[in-house]
Image 1 (cartoon, rainbow, N blue to C red):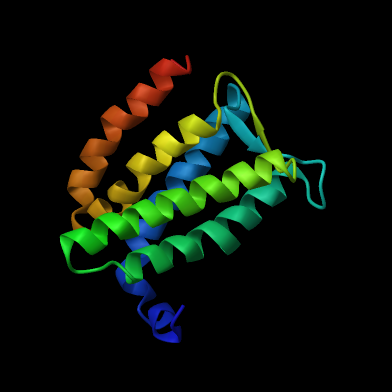
Image 2 (cartoon, helix red, strand yellow):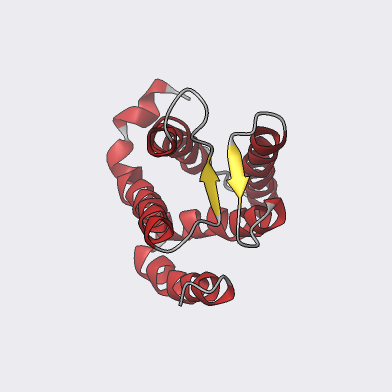
Length: 152
């Protein structure tokens, strides 16, 4: 990533925070109720430390790259979004299947992660452009997951 994007972090900070708060909210709800997926705590780090490492050292910088490299033309945008959806899904699949880094529970699987990524990347861009629209649109998505997986 170009060094300059870290200098412009204030442009992306609200959207990075949007993702981080959503992720941490999931971790809290999952801890209280039940997990759909979780990092395997049998590795080098306990589960919660693995979650924080993944969030702050891998996912947040990746989202910063995704946002900062967003193309201008519609065709390039579709390719860009599709590329990031595939990257996140493939990395998760490899991490779960070959490194036992992720455990799926309570009906969640890699296909649910793919569908989540399919929504997440456009939502991140929408949040960057219009946080009010993204927050409003996040409500039905969140309610869907909470109802479908019997959190409420």
